[in-house]
Length: 180
Image 1 (cartoon, one colour):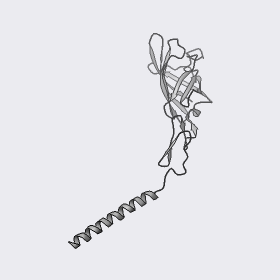
Image 2 (tube, helix red, strand yellow; image 1 turned 180 degrees about the vertical axis):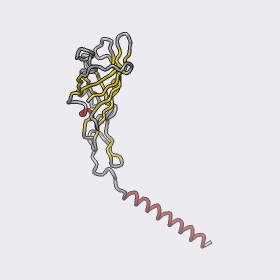
Image 3 (cartoon, rainbow, N blue to C red; image 1 turned 45 degrees about the horizontal axis):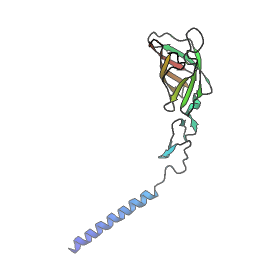
Image 4 (tube, helix red, strand yellow; image 1 turned 30 degrees about the vertical axis):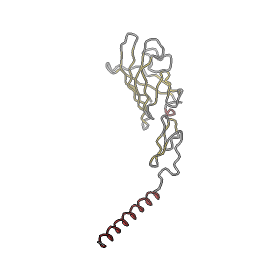
């Protein structure tokens, strides 16, 4: 009986020392986020910043909008069904009301005229740091509509688009485009 008691006490002691060691080890583990500062509402997890929508970079220091705004984009678009191209035109982005909003000026050049299809800006949203989404809208309130999305490629500094234009009769025409 004494032997059984000693074994029980030894087992309890080993378990207690193991538990204490685990607690001590855990409390001494390095905080991977110590010294990491995430800007603009970003949060640190595992030593890396997860940025709030509209921001990017190692420390969430950069506005995602900035790679789109402040330059002119030479647009080369074509109709999906016929393969016919729209004459090359120039479009611009400006910052919208929030850090994820963009305004696209001179969107979709008007065939043969060298002017924009829409007088007013097309409103777009950054759904992540590289994807621009155009919700269905009629920028000029004249029955002509646009919707679609584009993806920015950092290596080529180019946006690849798929979008649809609609006319007042309800006819929809799909386009693809490459803007540089």
